Amino acid sequence: MKPFIKPYTNDETLKDDIKKLTSKDISADDIYVISHDDDRTKRITKAAEVNTIGVSESGIADAVKSTVEKQGDTLRKQLQNIGFSETEAENYESDMDEGKVFLIVTNNENVGQHLA
Image (cartoon, rainbow, N blue to C red; front, side, top):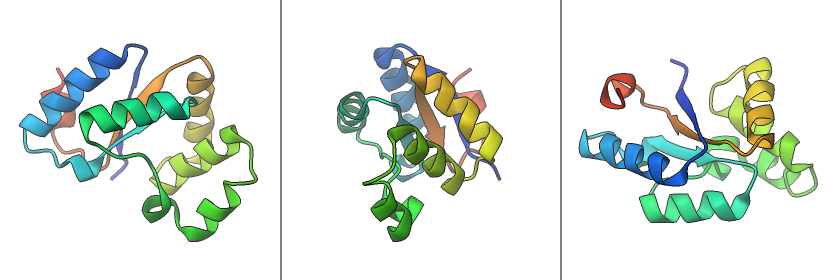
C-alpha cells in the first residue's frame, strides 16, 4: 500500500494533525516529515516526536550516497524508497522547492478519516 502524503505550508497545522493521528493510535514510528529545509524538518519532528526518512527507510548505501548528492536528489530518492514512484517523488520534491513540508504516514489505514 502506498503511503499517505499531505503537503503543508503551516508548521503548526502540521503538528496539530500529527497530534490527531497519534491520539487515534497511529504509531509515531509510521509518521514522517520531509522538507527541503533540514532545520525546519528537525524542529517539527522533535516537537511532534515523529521521524525523518533515514537510514532504516533508505538503506545504508543510499544514506552514504546522499552525503555527496544534491538535496533534491536525496529527497526524491527517500520518497521512492518509502513507496512513491519516480514521477510522484519528482512532483513532491518540486512542491518542497516552493516551501511545502510533507506529512507521510506509512501505515495509512483510516488516516484520511482522522484528518478530515
